[in-house]
Amino acid sequence: MSRRVPDIVTTDLSRFGFRELKMAARLLAAYCESPPDFLGDGVTVMMNMHSGYVFLTDEDFNVAMMNGDTLEQFHSCPECGAEGFAEELTESNDCCIEYLREIGGSS
Image (cartoon, rainbow, N blue to C red; front, top):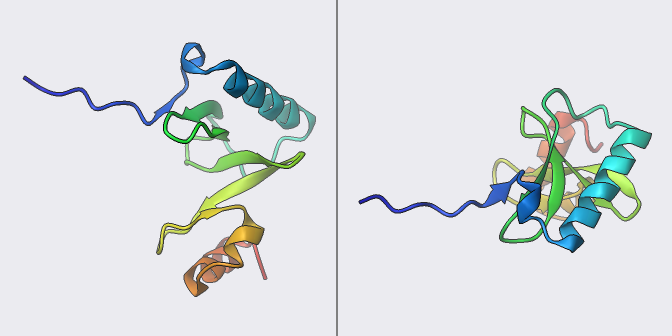
């Protein structure tokens, strides 16, 4: 008998609460107004079932989230695992700063 692994992320809007649906609507409105150049093909709305974060992601796993009133890229440092917007990662470890330099997100 196999155990079902619970979903961490979902695209199923029926699993979104009212708060998360409002966040998704805000993301889509920002995306329509000014689609970010870092998102490629296969863009979907997703929700992290553990954190409640709602975000856009593409087929290359690039992530866009609202940072205040702006749709921005949300990063995950491949070395230490730190997550955040570029300005948050520049306050993190040296590896995060190097990662942002490599992708052109910070000087």
